[in-house]
Structure formats: C-alpha cells, structure tokens
Amino acid sequence: MRLTVMTVIHCIWSFEVGGAETMLVDIVNRQCRTDRVFVVIVNNIYDKNLLGTIAPDVEVVRLERRPGSKSIWWLVRLYSLFARLRPDVIHVHNHDLLKVISRHAAKALFFTAHALSVPVENLHDGVIAAAISHAVADDLKRRNAKSKIITIPNGVDVDAIKFKQDSAAEGKVRLVQVGRLNVGIKGQDLLLECLARLHRDGHAGYEVHFIGTGPDRQMLEDMASESGITDSVFFHGGLSRRELYGSLCTYDIMVHPARTEGFGLVIAEGLAAGLKMVVSDIAGPVEVVDGGRRGLVVEKDKPDALARAVLRATEENPDRSVFRRAMKDLYSVDLQVERYRQAYADAINGKR
Image (cartoon, rainbow, N blue to C red; front, top):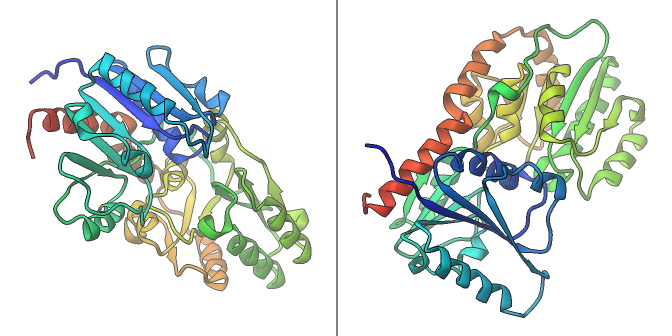
C-alpha cells in the first residue's frame, strides 16, 4: 500500500556537530523526497556548516532560545507552529524536550533514544521510542516495560564512503579514532596508553590519528607529551562528512575504546571504508561488529588488551568487502528512512 504524504516535524534542542545531528540531516534529506518535513531548533546554538547540509526542501525553524532562559516565548512559538501545520508526526530528539511536548500535538509522537542510560522512565501512552540499537532498546525496556519501543539504527551512506583497496603499506601503521574528544565517554586516553605500550615494546611503527573536537584535547596533548609519543600522535580537528568519508580509507585500523556507547556510527562507517576494527566490549559497538565477527573486541579500560588486539589486527587480513556489504544491508540510510516512514504510518493508523 502506497503511503500518503505526511507532515513531519523534527524537534531538537541545539544543532552542533554530533551523532544525533548528523543522523537527523541524513534522515530529513531523504524524508523530504516523499513528505513535508520541518526541523525545529530550539536553542540559539547551531553549526552553520551543518545547517548548510540540510536539503532546501526541508524547512528549518530556529526558535533562538538562550540556554538557561526562563522565558516561555519559544514554547508559545512552538505550539503556534504545531497549530498552524497540524503535523502527522512530531519526532523529538532530546529526552528533556519530550517533557514539554504533548502527545496531543500530532497524530503520532516519536522520540529517538541516541544513547544508553537516557533518563526516561514510564513513557506516557502514545509516545513511541525509537532506539538506535538493540542495546539501547533493551536499556529502555528495563525502565519502560509497558511502552512502545522499536529499534531503528543510525543510517550510513555507504556509497559515499571511499573504500580502502590496499592493505597497510610498509612502514607506519595508522590507527584512527573518530569522535568527540571526551575521554570519559570515548576513551581516547586508553588509545594513547595503548600506543605508549606499543612503542615501549619495540613497535614504534604505529601512530594514532584523532578526528574530532572536544574539551579534552589539551589533556590528550599533554598525555602524549608526557609519554614521549608526541611525534606519533596527530589531531586533525573536526572534519566535514565529505572530508571524513574521503579520508577514512587512508587509515589501517580503527580503534574505538569507548567507555559508553549506544551504537557506534563511526564503527559502521569505518567498516564501510574497509578498515580493520578494534572496539571495547560494550553493547553498542559489539552489536555493530556482530559479536567479534567483523572486528576484535577487548575488555574496556584495558590498554594492555587494546595493544595486543592492535598487534593481532595488524596481522589479520579479513575480507573487508564483506563488512562493507554488511553495513549497506543492515544500516543504509535509505533502509532506516523507510523503517521510520512505516513506523510513522503504523502509529497514525493505530497499529501496534
């Protein structure tokens, strides 16, 4: 049955570069091909370059709220927008924003949980939670046993990612970590400890490349200096999606030593690029590497185990094209958009 055109409003607090925001761009840029799509940004915090990647057919509404403001004017404007557009679907991307949006404002109200331990309990009837992984879904179900929870992973534009055609060249082995420089979440300090151990054990041919920005860059630079590995550590800052997708294939092994992770979009992107993979043993990344079939899994917070895994990954030569095909079959953006569209239609039509 052909689905009719829907009006969909996505609501998000801010629009900086991050997993939730880049996923949202991918989703709305495809949804607008079949539906009327709006993106509402509540706070006056947004990345202009990222905004520029949103398709012209998507209408962006900026409410310009100042973080911490007690004014409710933005909320008045939001509900005025709902009243004018009478949306079929409101799709919320922050748990605390969900608290101020009534389920009666649209025919269907969706909420995407982008991480583990999202502080949402007893979701009220009528809200459908979309988890980005089975791990996140299971976490939500433990606290929302009676709620409607579905799993729709983050999408990957596999065709846009350049594929690595050759194995590691003679000489340097290039390790890469992609993500916000926040060691409490992404564990970049563990990768530096791993590199220091490799160098101390006579494996000086390894170097680490960090792609991303964040509050812990100076701490990581100081740590590299204290460990005597500065010449083998490179900080590339934030890259556009196009730059990232064109450069991933120049690395050899992606190391993702996260301490917490709901999914691990960069892992899927790395596998699509043909990189060997080493991840920590937390639910989201383990799900993406299929329990270790697409990469090596090590106990988190163990730099020695991380170093051993890197050495092992260097020697292995898996069929990386199989992993790329798996990412397309499981996580393509088009597939996830179709899943959302069907879930919207089912919710509007009262299907459980």
